[in-house]
Each structure stands twice: as C-alpha cells, then as structure tokens.
Length: 472
Image (cartoon, rainbow, N blue to C red; front, side, top):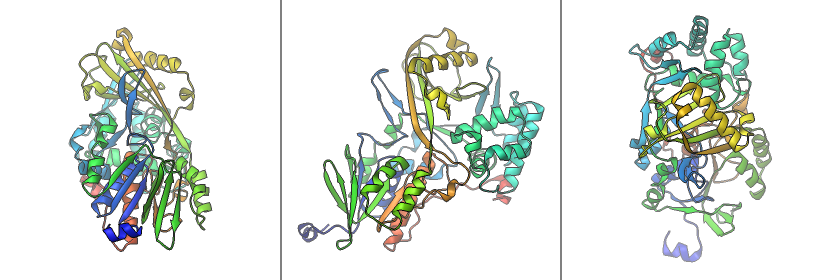
C-alpha cells in the first residue's frame, strides 16, 4: 500500500483476510501469498492446525495430537504444502499394513513387485485373517471398483450386499479399513468415496498407498507459517476470532469484526468448519445465496473419533503401527517408534465412528482400551501404564453419505470477493488433510481468477502405474 493510499484509508487491492488457521486456511494463505497477495491469516486460538493440531495436555504433561492423522502417497497437495513450509522431511513413511487378530495372529498387507493393480494381490491372498471365501469376495469387489465407475447415490452397505461380500470381508476389511478410514458406518458412506479409497490406496500404484505419519507433534508442522507469510508481506493474527463481516460496495472492501477490533481487505476467504460457518452466516451480508448456503450446511453431519494415549514403562511391541481386528480399537500407532522418547513406550489408539465409546467416562474408556490392547500384545498386560490421556473429537469429520456431493458448495460464495475453504467444500475428497489443502488451493485459484489471474495452484493427482495406466 502506498503512503497516499494509507492516508486516504483506501484498501490495498491485493489484500486478503483468511479467517481460520486450520489446514485449509493455511493452504489458502500460503498459496495466495505466493501469488503476490498481502495475506492476513486470522485464527481465534493460539495455535494453528484446527482439527489436525497438537496441544499441551496438562494431565499427562505431554504435547499430544488431538487425534492421529495420517497421509498417503496420493496426497499430492498436502505434500506440496509441506514442501512449501519445508517440513516434508518430518514425515515417517511405511508401505506395510499389519492386521492383528485377538490372540496376536498377524497378517501383513504390503506391495509386491507385481505391476499395479496386482501389486497388493499377494498380500491379500496370504492374509491369514481372511478365509478363502473372504479373499475371493475382496478380489471380486476390488475388480469391480477397478473396472468401472460406481453409481453415485448408493451407500457402501447396499453396494456390498449387491456384490456378495462375506461376513469376514465385511467385518475385517470394509468395516475396519474402509469405514474407519472414512469415519462412518457402512450405510452412511457414498460408494464413490469408498471406491476412491480403494483405487488410491490399493490399486493405482504402490507409491500412492504408502502411509505417512508426522515425526513431530502436528502443530510443529505449521511452525513456519508465520515466517512464510511475513516474508511475503503477510501476517498471522492469533487469538482473534472473527464474529462477522461486512461488504462495502463503494469501497470494494470487506471489514471483518472481532472483539479486538476490525480488519479490512479487498478479498475474504472463510476457511472454517461447517459448524463455525453456519454460526457466522447470520453475521454475513444479506444475499440471494445465503439461505441456500445455510440449507446446504444444515444437511452436513459430523462423526466422532476418540484417541487413547498411553505411556508404558516398557516397549509393548516392535511394530510401528497396526490395524486391530474384531474389537472397538481400530488402529494402534506406536508413536515412540518415530517420535523417540528417552524411556518407555508411547502408544496412541484410535477408535473411529463409535458414538457409544465416545460417551464413556474417561476411566471406563481408557480401561476398556488397555484391556483390549492386551488381547493383541501380551506385553501390554504386564507393562505398567505410567500415564494416560483420552481425547474425544466429537466433530472430527463430516459425513459422506449418498448424495453428499449435491450438498457440498464450491469455493465461490454468495458474496463478492469472498471465497469458501474447508474440507467440507466440494473437493472430490472426503474429510482428510488432503481434502482441506485442496479446498484452500481451490479458494486461492477462484480468488485469482476473480482478478484475471488464471494461475493453477492445485497439484495434479499422482498418476497410476503399471496396468492401471490403461484404466485411468
């Protein structure tokens, strides 16, 4: 902004306010800063990351993630954001998925040297947790998802019923690996989203299905955001929530208000959860599309994720992570394997889409988790739990039921020079960090287009390899 403009109160035509410092807001801010905009990123909390963040737990006296978040090799835009921030080397990668039954028997799914989509077939055929009938059912279902696009508007449960899935295949693969990955019950999942998970993680290429976990607490991944913005004429404002915004058509400017004052800019990006967006709507200007957006938001639902954090006095397993079958615990992450401790063992257990578990009192939930953990790892029965923590993220993810794509809005909002971001915006992805980054990048692209800049921000999907190149 020139001195003359500053004295007259004019708004810098390249100024942007991004409301919300979650992954979507961070992505939009960084992309817009790189495009030459002067960005002010506003976050009501004192830390960044939203639902993919970490915080100091006073009871455990440890910094913990609000829930274990993972990424995969297919998450091209999330890795692009990590590369921008210079933290791509802080991700621990693994291509093995160990499935464990109560009693300790293990099966390992890992890519072979066969070309895609056959690279995962030997692992399924060798897996002892599946019967011969289960394996035949899984191969048949994956073949169907590989060969043809599934019809939208159908639930995964109905699709499984129509494709002869056995009880074992349903319980030990679809309900666990797929339903927990999408954090919803089988009847509340649009089959096209299940197909996306299957194709990306199991069919397209071995690289696309590799799983990544942060070697540091999640919020440390965003530690460089403030310096990144400042180096590009932007700034980060923490501890300031936006309660409303007004558009001045004469000045072509937005004024965002909070309990600490006002912020003004030419452009506005609302990168909020859908619940927070619904609360903000009444404080936004009247417009023809506001009621329609409110109706869309009212149809979105959330699902809970619980995580139990346990610190043992000794190591209970040599595994880095595992899928746990037939019990309430779905995933075990042995975090001290990639976030080293001086002594003992730090384990995080994840329970997805289980409202009953989320209602349990703290001691009952932790006790149940410890008891079930011992069914998979005998050492957990004799090791001493030094300390523990329970995190209930009751609004962890938005649901992806049949018809959800008709509900999710695009990045363009009902107001001029205002754009929407958040994993719930139309990205083609479910509620993931990758989906959040994509929404931020889409908002940045839409804003750039509004001023005549047609630059591409979104990173292309990872290309299929092997025979999958023929299927696209």
